[in-house]
Image 1 (cartoon, rainbow, N blue to C red):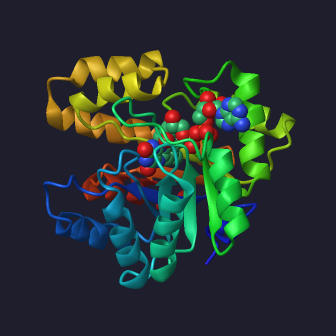
Image 2: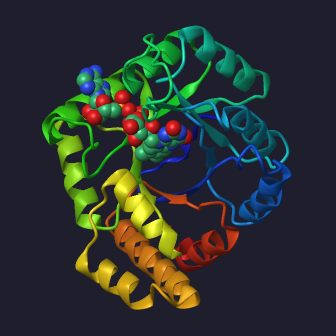
Length: 285
Ligand code: FAD
C-alpha cells in the first residue's frame, strides 16, 4: 500500500522510526520491540539505513518482518551518497523481493573515511532514479530549521521542491523542539508550491547522552523551556525520562491542534516511550 494514501485532510497520522541494532548485537533484539510497537497501531514504521553500509543489510530484514509478519506498512530508508547506481538497484531488488513498496530516499551523511561515489549527488537524484525504475512509492526528508549544509533557507526550499518534483510523495521532518520552526517551515513550503503531506519528526529526549548528541548532529535549536527542563533533571534519570516524554507530548498536542498531517516519532527503539506518547495523544489524532 502507498503510505501517501494514509494521510487525510482532517486527521493526523502517527508513525514510528526504528533503527537496526549494531552489527555486534543480534537482530532478534529489535523483534520484541517491534511486537510492542505493533500493539500501538502505528500508520507505518520506518527503518533507518546505515549510509556507511554498517547496518544496511538489516534494514531490509527488519522492514520485511514489519510487512510480512506484523502486517504493518514499512518505510525502508535508503541512502545514495556512498552507493553506485548498481548498488542502489541491488538494494531495491531486495526490497521488491520482500514486498517492500515504500522507501525514504536520502542522500545520507557524508562519511569522510569512505571513498565518495559519484552516481548520485543529492537525494532528489535518487528520488528520480527510483521513480524512473518504477514500482516504489517515495518519501523524502526535510529540515524545518534548514539543512546544516544549505547555503540559506531559500535554496534549501528550492532543493526540497526538486525532491518533490522528482517523486517524493510525502516528507518526514528532521527532529525539532520548537514548534514555531515547523510552522514557519510549512509556510515556506506553501510559498514554494510544495503541497505534499509533511510529517513532524518528534524525538522524546529521555536521557542525558541524547541531548548533546542530537543537538550537535542536527543543529536543532533549544527553546528556553526545554533547556530549563533538561538542566533541572539531567542528574535524575527517571525525572528526565518523564519530563522528556511530557515535553514531546506537549509538542504533539500543539502540532495536532494546528492540523499537522502526521507525527513521526523517533522511538530510539524504546517501546516504553512510544507507548506513553501514543496513550497520551491517541484520542487526539
Ligand atoms: P538532500 O536532500 O540531498 O540535501 C542535502 C543538502 O544538499 C541540503 O543542504 C540541500 O539543500 C542540498 N541540496 C539538495 N539538492 C540539491 C541540489 N539539487 N542542488 C544543490 N544542493 C542541493 N541518514 C542515514 O544515513 N540513514 C538514515 O536512515 C537516515 N534517515 C533520516 C530520516 C529523516 C527523516 C531525516 C530528516 C534524516 C535522515 N538521515 C539519515 C540523515 C540524512 O541522510 C542527512 O541529513 C543528510 O545530510 C541529508 O540527506 P537528505 O536526503 O536530506 O539530502
